[in-house]
Amino acid sequence: MFKLFITALFIFMGCKSYAATITIHDQNQQPLANAVVWLTATDHTLQTLPVSSLFTMTQKDRQFTPHVLVVPQNAQVEFPNADSIMHHVYSFSNAKSFELKLYREQPQAPIRFEQTGVVELGCNIHDWMLGYIVVVDSPFYGITNTQGQIALTPQHGEYELNVWHEGFSDISQTESKTIALGSAAVVYQIKQVIVPRITIGVDEFDDYE
Amino acid sequence: MTMNKVSLAFILLGLAFSFNALAQVKGLLQLTAVNGDPQLSWQEGGVGLYRYDSDNDGIVLSQGLIDFRVDLSTNWSAHGVVNAYQDPQASLGFSQAYFQYQPLTSSKYKWHVRAGGFYPLLSLENPDMGWISPYNYTNSAINSWIGEEVRTVGVEATIKRPGRSFNSKHSFAFVGATFKGNDPAGTLLAWRGFAMHDRQTTFNEAVAFAPVASLNTSQLQHQANQVLPFEEVDGRFGYYGGIHWDYLKKSQFRFYYYDNNGDPAALNYSTGQYAWDTRFSSVAWLYKFTAQTRLIVQAMSGNTAMGESRGVDNDFYSHFILLSHKKAAHRLSIRYDYFEVTDKDDWTFDPNASHGEGITATLRYQLSPQWQLGIEGSALHSQADNREAMGIARKLSQQQLSLNVQWRY
Image (cartoon, rainbow over all chains, first blue to last red):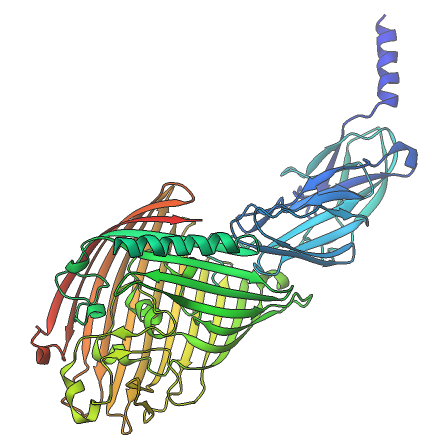
C-alpha cells in the first residue's frame, strides 16, 4: 500500500507542475532582490502563453507603481493615473515606443506589448519618474524577494532560465542559462556587477520646477 | 460685498466646470476670518504691512483661484491662473498666463520654453497651485514682494539634466529668460518697504501705497501714488538667469540673478510710472530632515533706482527661515523674516530707509483631500523713515490673527 502510494506520488509529480525555487545571487554570492526571472521551455509544448490578460501600471504619488512589471508577450497594460495632476508617460525602448498623456478621470485604452524585451518608462513632466515593463515569452515569471528567491511552477523539463535586473549595465540585455528542472534547487549567479539605481523620493510639493 | 463674493465664486466655478472636459483645471477657494491690526493696510493707503487691518475684521475671500493647463498639441500647452480678490476692491484677473513648449525627446537632457507672463521659479515657498504657499498663509517678505511686483512677460528657456537619466543623485536645471515690462518693480520697496501677505498682483492691476510726503516735491511730482508693477516704460529688455540643483529631492537649491535693465530716466507721464533699474540675487534652499520635517531658507539682496540722476537709489535685503513639520493630517509651519531697505541717494527730502522683522506660525489641518482648516498668528515690527512726515510713528508693531478654511478640487 505504501509502495503504491509512493509510486502514485511520483507519477503525480512527474506530470504535474511543481514549485521550483530559484535563487539569484550577485557576484558577491549575496541574494539579489528585485531580479526579474522567467523560464522559457526548450520544448514549447510545455508552456502556453495566456491568451489575453490585462495588467496595470499605475502612477501614484508621482511614481510608477509597481516599479517593475513583468508581463507575458501580447499582454495589455493599462496606465491609470491616481494622482490629481497630469502625467505624460513615454517610452523610447525598442521593445515598445509610445507616449500617453494621462489625465485623472480620463482613462485611455490599454497598450498591447507585442514584442519581448525591456520597456523603460518615463514621464515628460516629472523627470524623476522611472519604471519598467519586462515583456517575456513565458507564463513562468516573477520577481525575486529580499532573499533573492522566486518560486515558479513549471513542469519538469529543460528550460532557459532568464534573468534581468534594472542594475544591469545595458538594461536591454538579459542573462540566461539552460537548466533542467526537476532535481535540486536552482541557484544562478549574475555575471555582471549590479549598479544600484538611484530612486528619487518625492512629495506633493516637488513638482515646482 | 457679500453679493460680490458670491458672484465671484460662481464665476470661478462656472469657468472651472466648462474647462474641465478639455483640460486639467484645479481650483481653490479660501475664506478667512481675520482679526487685523488697527494700522491701515498699504492696500488702503496706510502704512500697515499686513494685507488686512481692523476694517477687514470678519470673513473675507482671501484666495479664489483657478489654475489651468490646456494641451494644444503633444508639445504645446497653455497655462493660466485666474485670481479673484475682494481686497482692496472686488477684482478678477490673471496672475499668470503663458504657453509652454516641452518637446518629448529621447535625449537624456530635457528642455522646455515658456512664453507669456509668469513667475521666475526662484522661490521654494510657493509650490502649491496658483503660486500659493502650503506652509504659512502669510508669505515671507521676499515672496510677498515677488508676488506683488515681480512678474515677467517674456520668454524663458530651461535645460534640465535630470539625475534619473544619468543614474545620479544630482539633478540640475539651467534657466535663462528675457522679458519686457516689470519696469516699476522696486517702487513699493522705496516708499512702503517690504510687507508680509499673500495678495498677488494680477496683470494690469495697480497697487496703492501710503501718501508719502516726498511725492509732493517737484522732483517726484510725476510719480503716481500707486504702482503698476508690470508696465513697460523704457522699451528695454530685461533678463534673468537661474540654476536649480537638487540632491535627490532631499535638498533643493536655487540661485537666480534678475535684472529688469530699467532705464531710470524713463517715465510714463500718463500713468505716473518710472522705470526702475532693479536687480537682485536670490538664493533659496529646501532641506528635508525627514519626510515630515523640512527647512526652507531664502535670502535676497538687490538694488533699485529711479530718476535721471538716480535720485531714488536703494539697496534692499531680506531673508527668512521656515521650519515645517507634518504629522498625519497636521502641518505646523513657523517662519522668521528679516527685511531692510537702505537709502543710498542724497535726496534727504525722500527718506526710503526701512527695516523690520516678523514671526509667523501656522497650523493646518487636512480634513479631507478637498477641505483644509488652519489658524495663523503673525507679528511684525518695522521702522520706516518716511512715516514721520505723514504724522505716523516711525516704529510700528503689528499683529494679525486668522482662521482659514480652504476648499480645492
